Image (cartoon, rainbow, N blue to C red; front, top):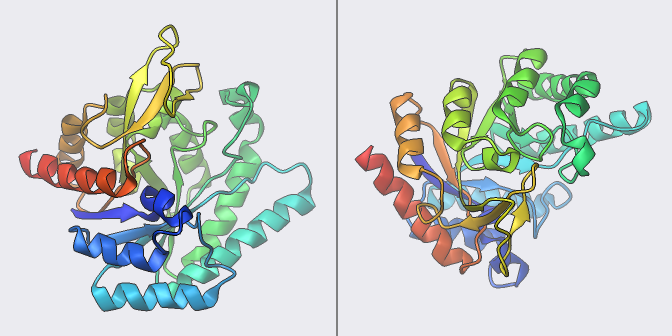
Length: 290
């Protein structure tokens, strides 16, 4: 198991001007991580190749692997021209990964923000042909560079484990797998232990995050809560402090034989550096105990 961190975990510090993406590389190394996932929020690389090269060189110099690159995407477009434009945009990011030596990418397949009426299985089925065609084109393009592309249980539309598998089987490409996020199943009101068990066989990378959970009939007051697909409440937590049965989740992952990249994602209210450090330490400890 290789423990690392998503740049998204330190986004508050990046946005505040307290850290750059180059600083994040040093921070991960200093705090016991071995790899970094790039989520280009608070900075961009695809239109800043000088910075992209600097990230690649800095990571190599300090011994931090660049494990993954995650970006939003939406293949459900109103016109064919817009669909083609979105495919072309994602191919530019694939070219960036080839330049940086990154061999794993996660892209969404629908818009992240959707109204309640589009969070349904019917919406997925109605637009499955676009989702599948877009994913195939990116996977096929990435294959020439030895890059694995993935769908994550992310974005409220294709978030439950069965929906992820629906897309995986329909796309049917050997280099198209899933980035398995152990916490995001809760956004679709699916028990994390269930989602993890079902999708572990298809996982090429794993995200670890934790949430506090409150039911729809107990609305919390104050704090950075958001609504699940069915109106329950979630708030980001330090890994091991929230309501997910994290020790059992990590035990399932370890027992499955998975031994690849494990990426910590912190999005709680605590200081991002404190939350990320405790989360990384807890994942290591739970793995050793499993």
